[in-house]
Length: 174
Image 1 (cartoon, one colour):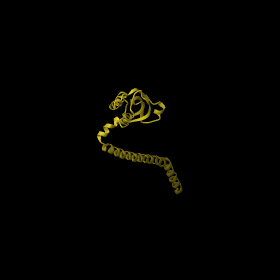
Image 2 (cartoon, rainbow, N blue to C red; image 1 turned 90 degrees about the vertical axis):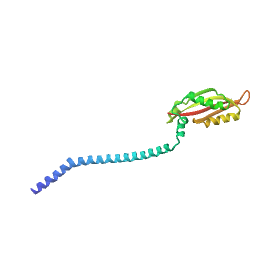
Image 3 (cartoon, helix red, strand yellow; image 1 turned 60 degrees about the vertical axis):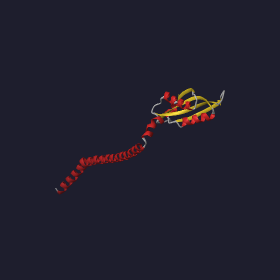
Image 4 (tube, one colour; image 1 turned 30 degrees about the horizontal axis):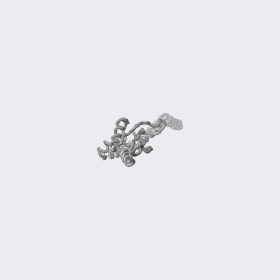
């Protein structure tokens, strides 16, 4: 009888282990793994919050006047008319007149390979003496709007100076 009771208790404990404890142990292990993942995610979120706070402090430290210039530097949309008027305004300060103005977007393959911004090339002709032209180009490059001079060619003019063909590239955010 003692052996039978011992065998019964051993079989009952094995049955309880495989029937109840082992499945519950698997559930607890799965919950612990989930908890580990959540803790890692929480740590990453806290790190990101610190980075956001640091960046926000840097933005808050910027001069509001400089922040107001940012949309002019690289706008979120392109306004062709405003852009050309601004360029003509710079040209008129040097007594120049922009002729044959042409806007051309880049090909789709080049645009799709970049992330974050688009660009447009603006070609125009202007007749000027070399020093005046250099002042004009310098003024375009130092303008608040981000512009790169990507091409310049010239031929001798009929009267004084040279006929310059200029291509500039400007950018805007996608």
